[in-house]
Amino acid sequence: MKILMLVNWKVEYTSCTPKDKQPPDYVADGEKYWFFRYFPDEIQADVIDVRSFSALEHFEKNKLRFYIWQIFRILPRLKHYDVVLSHGMQSGIVLCLLRRMFGKGKYKHIVFDIGAFNSAKENGKALKLMQFASKSLDGVIYHTSGQKSYYEHCHPWLLDKSRFIPFGADTEFFSGELDEMSENSETPYILCIGFNKRDWDTLLKAYNRVETNVRLRMIGNSEIYSEDKRVTVLPPVTVTELRKQIAGSIFGVVPLEAFNYSFGQMTLLQQMAMGKAVIAADVPSLRDYVTDGSTALCYPAGDERLLAQKIQLLLEDSNYRDKIAAQGKKAVERQFNERVMAERIEEFIKEIGEIK
Image 1 (cartoon, rainbow, N blue to C red):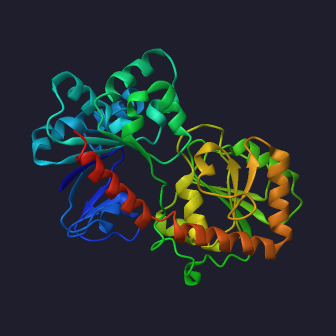
Image 2: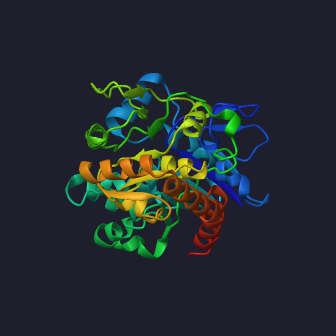
């Protein structure tokens, strides 16, 4: 089986494994890409990213919100593949539209629906376009089970073609057995990672309620401003540096806005994989991955008072913090890792291949 994967970000094509990137962010000669490393040898996969001319890249990313040049690059090659996987509708919609207008061809087209087809819009022109395009799809993979209700309401023809497959962390890279990589900071800190859909305001207000000398370190959005001298704001860092930051933290917080599609799962699972307790917003995108009071602590999105209580609890009770961390790590090792995700993706691809 030959698979073509279209990713909606830029990857590094390299002759050797880079030390500062995660598997989704590079394609190395002689190595299988990302989760395909867990696929049988008879399955081959090629990867095309969104790189283009500088001006066109900016226009597609910031204005169009989808990628045209990526599809034009692969059109002559489509006949050589059995399956095309589009990671996100930004990399899938143009191909969907072409298949609606000119026929599907022999290959199967499957989309990883990260953003619930354009942020789960339920009316307007954007929805109509997505509905028209999605009717050409052979399969949909989604990482938030709550998205099923959106398909029922807006894309019912996809229900028999869609599959909830939990996202998985790279437990080989994000391992808790990395004490030598810890930052060894003399000043203890709570860690918050990410950029999109983060509820910085609620976290900062909650932290302001907590009486502690433990600092709050926020990585990913350098534009955050806080007058609290205990708060440190850092821009995005390399993945190796991120691993060090996680290793050196006391515990993590994933403060998300309330929405019904995938965000925050990667940073949540990376910290859990490294044996860190995590406080997470109780939102649909994370409910599939944690059990409150067992594998993580949860709080209602936007509730600064309850978030402050959870932070205080983990600061004051190290035994409870260690218990949450251990149970969270086991959950990732058991079911929320790349190997399990890859097995489920492979199974789904084979099922879709039999759909007539």
